[in-house]
Amino acid sequence: MPVLQCPIDGCNWKSQDLDEAFAAALTTALQIHDRTVHPPLAQPSTHKLKLDPPSIATGCDPDQWSAFTRQWKMYKTGMAITDNVLPTALFYCCDTNLRTDIMRDLQGDVASMLETDLLKAIKRLAVKEESTLVQRIKLNRMTQSPGSNIRTFVASLRGQASLCQYKATCKELGCNHIFDYSDEIIKDNLVRGIADPEIMSDLLGDSKTDRTLEETVSFIAQKEQGKVTRSAVGDSASAMSATCNTQKRLQAAGAKCWACGGPAHGQRNDRKARSRYCEAWTFTCSKCTVKGHYTKSCSKCTTCGVWGHRDASSRICTQGKGHRNPPNQGKSTKDQEQEQVGYIYEQLCTTSEQTNQVSRLEHHIFNGHWVASVMIL
Image 1 (cartoon, rainbow, N blue to C red):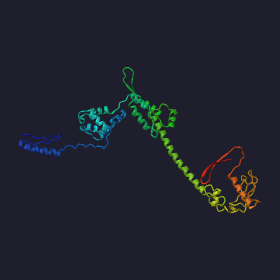
Image 2: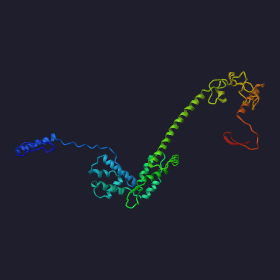
Image 3: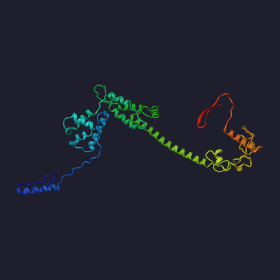
Image 4: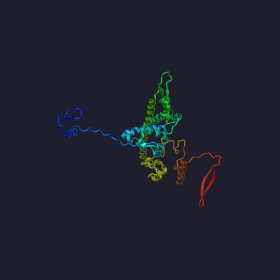
């Protein structure tokens, strides 16, 4: 008589010694037991990321190919691409022209190829091979772009230096150690390609000359940050200066007119502005008998003691160097007016001794229309 047992490890259940017919029925019951008591463990679901596939086109350089292969590894992991569709996904990372070249070059089924074989085929058709010497020349010509920071420039140098094979094998007998001196070459090209001449001067003039590549990058980055901060502080100082200038203009706007004692007439408070706006322009002062200012605003000379001017620098001061007779003392009204006109003329013009030099005065004469003319003086 058969005895049935649970096939699950660790389960001690078993049936009694029964006949075959009953054992068959019990087998069905055992299957039910297996599904209910020992359900299959749920497989963890793989979370897929929504990533844009990397792309590759014909005519790329080795640096671009290296970047593509690294992006492809991350893409297939993030998207959880299974092995059966991996070649198809890789094929459609190529652009249209490259896919056409692959189909012409590979006559077999691309979807059934191994990933490594398909990558070799894509590289053969897409990558433009260049000699190591050409890559080194490109590295030596690289410079920092204006506006880019130094760490971006270093990243570009590292990518190009990886194609230059800056490696050497130890020449000692029995030693096969390979030296990688890329960092020294990168540091030299970094210093040579700095865009800011002021930072380059600070670096070359610094007392510490044995900096590593990372120390050099940190030094330059600090200088760049300092210049950015200084620029921001300069903008703040400019704003403060503009505020001070505005305050000065407001203070100037609150200035008073010396003739009437009221607010100033315009920014300069000159004769033209006062003739239009000053209330004292037609007033005759009782102290100096001159029109143009109120009696309360009249000044007394500190040198000659006469009213109508402030000090000896005035032209009408009797004890000043530029003395001339006051325009309205002991003169008729007509003489006073002529004297005032002459006084104003002297304020606006200067005289000099006559020379024999000929002067040309270009002007226009209107005779129905404007005609250019020249006067010989």
